[in-house]
Image (cartoon, rainbow, N blue to C red; front, side, top):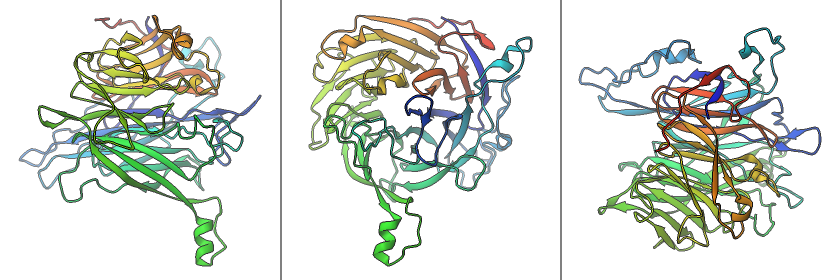
Length: 484
């Protein structure tokens, strides 16, 4: 079914990823993000941008700024010079930036007689913060692991949300969302990984994932000092990273100081393991996606251009524990999304335009297949899946490249999460307003109630906020995508 959109912007650089931070319910009457980070009135949204600058023999860049379509405003004056920098060396280079938007939750007080757009709650504001990086951003993830004193994933102890970004330079950057002394929210740099191969040809970091399931199965949510990230690369490798924190108070006590902010941490990210994971015709194959899995914190999943999905035990990575290849996938495996509530269950997306739902314990065949209408690049389970007893736990948001975006509901998922099969799929909404590849999509939620969806596309540099439930909106996208 066609969908309505609420607002749109045009980003200065090509939009490659889009991630929102989901608030945490804190009992009746409130939403809590943690001490000192109260975002009740706005949802943080980050768009990661990537742009390749190719320089001709005359020294002019080939990706000079292209004016946005009529009626779409560029959200930053810097767009006028995007891609216009000279590259004196004559070599191609990659530009990137993180763009932070705070999406407000309050509706306009305009009367119903006015333009319906004035009554829409969800609008892009000006970018609250722009972080320019040494190279393009390919992927990014908010840390969603919840630290608790009481044995629940949802009683949040952390004071600041943390965002990890994957860069074409091979590095991973960590930023925290803070206000500090500024009137606006900003992204503060916390730490960066080292280059994987200093001095050699550096592989591109294509994707990353936090281990949001550490301690889930044993009920231990109390270790807030150490986290894990898995990342994938263009040279066929996977890598594990340890994220550690040291309290400045502890450091100062060792050094004999006591006048420090005892709520401040020093964070570091260090690569602990790397292995060759995928190849095709004897050459490394791009590993497009990777993830941890609920149910076994030692399991890593990977998908690559070699048309295979592999399962790894990180305690022994010389050989995968399971592989699904061309007998199932007709093209590269591009997206993996573990279910937040059901242990061992995950979705796998591919260039072959199918979403497959698997149970890690029964890998002989997928539980079900869903046609996505385009190559699958990103998938996001409904945030209510993080509840102890989730409702709507089969709802999945999909960015399907040239097929736009859609929301699908995998029926009977309550059964398939334990020991049944998902035998029905309902397409709840389809969004095809993007004029190029839809690469990023995420839910906009205040509590577990998801009020809207945001998505971005690459070549036209567009980002939309749209209605996944087809309520009253400002514009209607009447083009239905092919189901082929």
